[in-house]
Length: 134
Image (cartoon, rainbow, N blue to C red; front, side):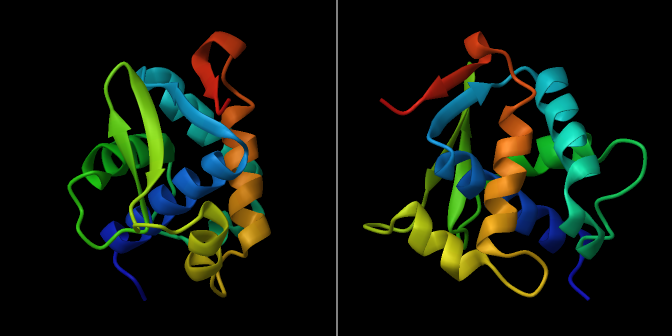
């Protein structure tokens, strides 16, 4: 069984890839908005039960912490840059989002599952809180 940190890392990476797959380059970095959007998506995402360490009354806080640690991790397929915006990006040089999603998918969550999680997540942000790829 993966540790809590490993589960959070996997979800943070999967969310970054799912958001990028939706054509979004950044979302508002406001902590409350990020947490609420994650909680909304997590409650509706069927594979969430495959990550039992991300449970309880506020899984969004775990996501927020993981998102902010992601840029410093060395072994990630995707990570988030934080500033005024939270910007997901692929860390593997010359890899596409789809290639990373294929590598990231496993028995817990498919490529489509990660795309669904990204879509659910960004659906909670207003238009002014999302930057789409042009």
